[in-house]
Amino acid sequence: MRKFLNVLAWLAIVLFVLFDIVLIMGVRLPRQHSVARTVTIHKPAQQVWAALTDYAKQPQWRPDLVSVEELPKRAGLEVWRENYKNGMADTLITEQWVPPIYLVRTIADEKSPVQGSWEFTLHPAPDDSTVVTINERALVRNPLYRFMGHYILRYSYIDSFLKQLAAKMGEPTAKVS
View (cartoon, one colour):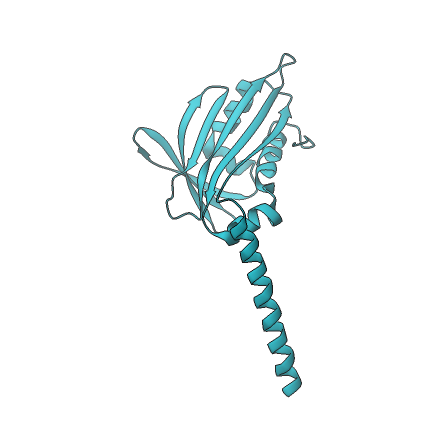
């Protein structure tokens, strides 16, 4: 029994030290960040825009979404809640849009651990393809979330969204950079 308690005590110490290391690394990261990711989709910008802004149908092509629901407008701007398979939800407000080339959606939930926006820019190309760029600008107050986003997730959720959009447009092997 004593050996078991000794092992348990050492395990607790190691976990405490690891948690402190993660916390210190998270504190050292900046609270604000900007990350841009891009994909080329071989469809006209108007088609990409239509898929991107049809929020009600996004659960059909985004496997991470269970549902979306339209909420009452705020200051005349569209507001939607995205409900994810992991049980979390985001309330998003569409703050700016210039069809079919520019869209800004901002997290409207002040209690969210992350505050910020995704800026979508669609650049039509001469060959009828569209270069889609998402620029995430965010404020992450919690150092554990900063650590997770930077070192573990590495902003892969942006890549995932762009790959899902490309797959929706018939290009499941599109490369995100």
